Amino acid sequence: MRTPVSLLLAGALLGTMACDDDDEKPPEETPLSVEAEKGLSIVPFALDTNGLSNAEKERIGMGSYLVNAAGDCGTCHQALQPNGPPKYMGGGIAFAVGAGGEVVYARNLTTDPKYGMKLTEAEFIETMRTAKDFSSDNDEEQLIVMPWYTFRWMSTEDLKSIYAYLKKVPAVENPVPADIKGALAAARPVPFPSSYTDGEVSRPLPAESTSDRLNIDRGMAISTLADPAAFSTFSADDKKLYGRGSYLANAVSDCSGCHTNPQRNLQTAKIPPDLFLSGGAIFATGPGMDAALKLKRSMSSNLSGATHGLMKDMTYEQFKEIIVKGQYVRGTITRPLVYPMANAAEALRKLTEDDLKALYVYTKNQTPRTGAADKQPQEPARWCATDADCTSTGGGTCNASNECVGTACTEDWQCGACQTCSSNVCVAPAPNSACLMGGI
Ligand code: HEC
Ligand code: HEC
Image (spheres, rainbow, N blue to C red):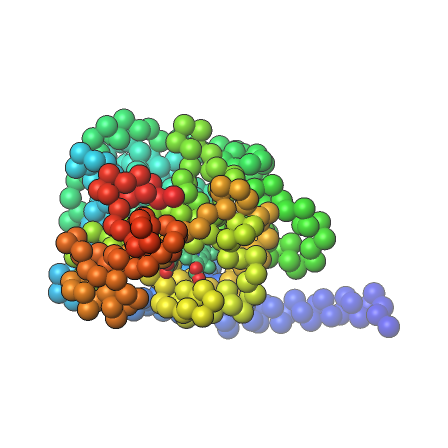
């Protein structure tokens, strides 16, 4: 039985002990989150954590988790080397953004004093949220290729963590050429709204809160489609996984950026809800990259379709296997995933089991897309030097533009990405094919 007296004594005793403790060692620190622990374990360079407080380690670890596991900043921001492995975050990859030679270059995000990122934390957050290009001539231009329309929905805490992590990335002395934006230089930054209005339904963003560390409420607000009819019957755990999955998919991992085609309506900035995650976007490899990857172009899979969608019949174990092993599975066919999903999977497989499950629960439970939106995406179009390259990878012959063609078909979807089925054989797309520019 506790009496007021013993409470008083206990209090006095604890008080003394705390005092003694203060003299000898610093107060107990908050332990790191599992995500930050994971983040620290996957930093791709030697990070010296000596002398860092747990609060600092949490920041940097969480930043690494967002950059290297949940998001994949590294694939676009790496510095490719003619001989040898790419340099982490050194920048310089060119992205063609128009038919008239317009090109933008991924920036050097390292700590290199001359060529690295010079943004302050506040500017970095503004860049991620509004696309303001501080490095452009007049400070008023917009980032073009960078998926800011996805990253803008990250919480301020998470953006701060990414910034803290980038400030630890070793310098890479790699100058990045100036962008040639052409008419796109007229695009202006987009103010950050207080509501999510890009999807089927608009929802106000919840107040920023450190108690919702995993941004489950934020995820619910930025979910592109209306909540599925069955949502109210989900277990409490599944509701959390769904919210977290939406945050990862729609603010960090950018599943929709690649699996919704077209990604956005450029006039209204809305993601077309009928097409959400139903695939069909095209990813072409340029000269050099095509030979290295033995790939001309790939097409994103249909995740959400009622008939052709992949997720409707997928178990968590199968989903995990695709991501962890980097495998594409269709009936009896199993092959390695190709660019750029191979790169995305390389990052995603570093997620915690809970976060992988969250992505599964979210993508699996999207109300199925139907009709014309329920697309039948095509296999990768294979690169070849000789016919032998084709016969060994699925048949056909090598045409003058180094593309495997000539396999048997009855419909277009049985041919390589953007190829068409003509008189029962797959033929290469015409140079002006709409598919080459915008997928299906
Ligand atoms: C699809 C490729 C792509 C991905 C993925 C990507 N970026 Fe970028 N990023 C670019 C390109 C290209 C630019 C520069 C120009 C533009 O977009 O117009 C850029 C610019 C930036 C800038 C502006 C730098 C400056 O000095 O002004 C920052 C900051 C940045 N990226 C951070 C990130 C972070 C953090 C991630 C991951 C969460 C990321 N990027 C993912 C392509 C990408
Ligand atoms: C940079 C673009 C890109 C991003 C980001 C991306 N994907 Fe993909 N994804 C693709 C492409 C392209 C394919 C087709 C790959 C192939 O044919 O090997 C694909 C294939 C897949 C597959 C299917 C494998 C199969 O058997 O057909 C799954 C599942 C998948 N993606 C899920 C996701 C999820 C979930 C996310 C977000 C966490 C995501 N993807 C993000 C481009 C992307």
